[in-house]
Image (cartoon, rainbow, N blue to C red; front, side, top):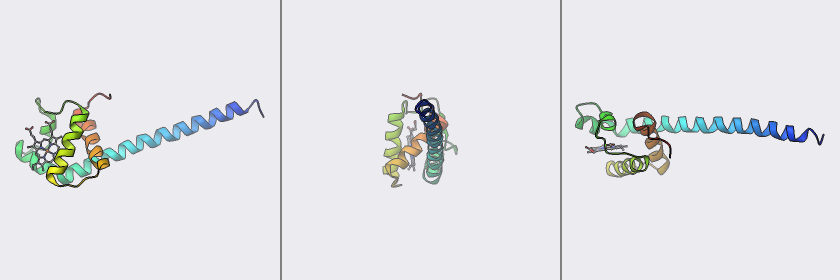
Length: 109
Ligand code: HEC
């Protein structure tokens, strides 16, 4: 029994890691889906009006302003305040993650 214990512990650790890894991937995906829905609900019309009807051009144009994730997060938080969407911090982060994953594609720090 003693000899088998390390293997058992390792097997359990491997299973736990696999399960936890999957959960964090799912959490990321659902946060991004939540960010997309929030963004579509509150942020499209005004950006579209400024960029010839394409609300996403503001994120893909050559001279877009935000050059790193921290300042993108600040801008999302700022627009959230200005627009009065009243998102909580985790929702601001979800929208930031969605914009990053979809348009900005900043390198992870
Ligand atoms: C009332 C109009 C308006 C609404 C509504 C609005 N924005 Fe903006 N947004 C702007 C303007 C104006 C800019 C700056 C455009 C520029 O730099 O030329 C901007 C820029 C941004 C940028 C920076 C883009 C870049 O250049 O990299 C982000 C990110 C952003 N907005 C996110 C949001 C989010 C998230 C929401 C929804 C909560 C939102 N905006 C709603 C007007 C608006």
